[in-house]
Every structure is written in structure tokens, then in C-alpha cells.
Length: 123
Image 1 (cartoon, rainbow, N blue to C red):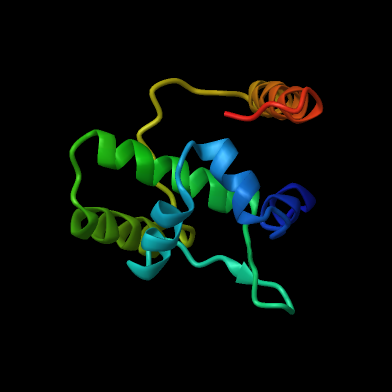
Image 2 (spheres, rainbow, N blue to C red; image 1 turned 45 degrees about the vertical axis):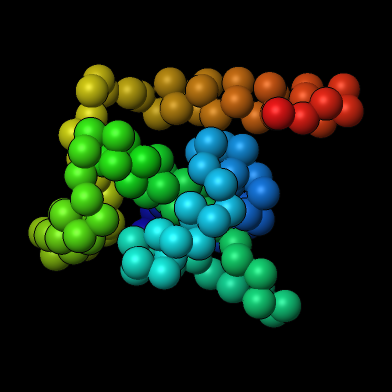
């Protein structure tokens, strides 16, 4: 596993951060876990911790639901993807993004979240 992939798979984000990054509620994220769509790691105190790969997967699930997929269809799709590629993802990109594009987008999103927290206002 490359260092980049290793870093993307590190579970470091608490559910609150994931909620901001994905625009999902805690209840939605827990529901996807109950449905075996996602499997976050647990800390020593049993708190859910998510990786960048988990965030990507949640965004994929959100996109699939917006396209009209049912949970059972998403489970099948993710299972098929995992069997064929060895990793779970929904791959129907609308456009190809380079690593630099992804870094720039994440940096912008983190900065926006950081600005909101510094100003004391929240969504």
C-alpha cells in the first residue's frame, strides 16, 4: 500500500467533522453503518472515527441515493465493486479530477469550515 493510500485510510475524523464535509446528519451516517454500507473504525472509547476513504464512500452513497438508488441496490453495487477491485467505491465520475484538484478542493473546504468556527457561527 502506498503512503498516499495509507494516509487516506487513516481513521482520524470524528463524526462531527464528517457531517460538515458530507452535509449528512449523524443519524444518516449511523444508518448507513447499520445497513453495512460503511464500517468506521472505533477509538479506545468506542467513538466512531472516519478516514478520507470513508468520507469519499459516504459522498458516493449520497450521490447514489440522489440518483434514485435504493439501499439494497447500493449494497449490491458496493459489494460488486469490492469484489472486482478489492476496494469499495462507486465509480461513475462526472469528470476526472487530478490529485492536485482534490487537494485544492479539500483545502478550500477545510478553510471554509475553519473560518466558520473562528467566527463563532455555525451552519
